Length: 319
Ligand SMILES: Nc1nc2c(ncn2[C@@H]2O[C@H](COP(=O)(O)OP(=O)(O)OP(=O)(O)O)[C@@H](O)[C@H]2O)c(=O)[nH]1
Image 1 (tube, rainbow, N blue to C red):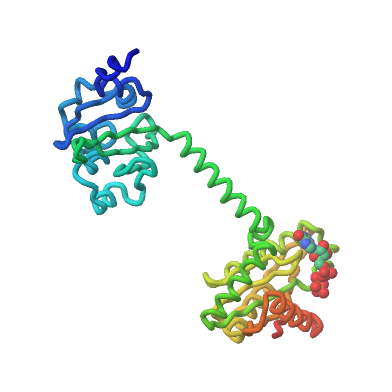
Image 2 (tube, rainbow, N blue to C red):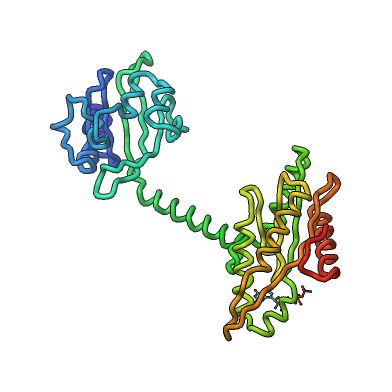
């Protein structure tokens, strides 16, 4: 086709030849073009909408401005904020254009995610004479993104949480302890750390079996969880060793909390497979962080206190 012939082709003809749904409005917000792709996507024919201000109709339940309307009215950030919240941003490619992604619950059977771009149309003097809006269905991409985020979240949880006790695992412990130590130094707030360990647990396993031992560990995990304040965090540090990080708590206050936990565990009646009722106990070591402490030195001190609790006869808390 010659250049001359191409020059003669109108905007409508051009728009009808692109596979992307698009419409154009003038400065009176009246639709001047509604392409074939948009007719198919919206179910509204250009005959019915050209000459009207119904550009909102395929997307919303009631009349409201589309992005093209906001563009022809002169970009107004408070209005963009009002209608598109945090979902819009200026186009990287087209000057004066804005893009947004949003979910449209009323499109199709289950709603669709659309990515839309509205761009000003200017005359030779740079005056806005209309706006063009293009729309792309991105539901499949959005679904894939959500699935990926969910999978990542599940993976993060799996790699941080111990299956048996539902407490955080040791890897996460060191990460959080470092973070809490930094925070306690920065804000000059106390930080207490408790390491605790079940007493004679090997004997429990040996006499009553590993599954019974697991039951004890699960119960202890549950008791620890139920004793935590919302800013505390608990970890399964090793097989039958646990750690509790207690921010903003002096050691004496932490001592009271740990003693409450210790007493509560000692009062739990565990029923073995043969119907025998047994009780278990724990020993605990407590420390309060000093400004000079690293996570390693703090754990070493708490371990030392735990060792003393074991050496002193077990079923006690030392600091
Ligand atoms: N049932 C069960 N037992 C575990 C698990 N992890 C570690 N253990 C057991 O915990 C026991 C720890 O034994 P020891 O380190 O000798 O300690 P202890 O018998 O509790 O003695 P003290 O700590 O000195 O009071 C071992 O028998 C491990 O097999 C687990 O996930 N489930």
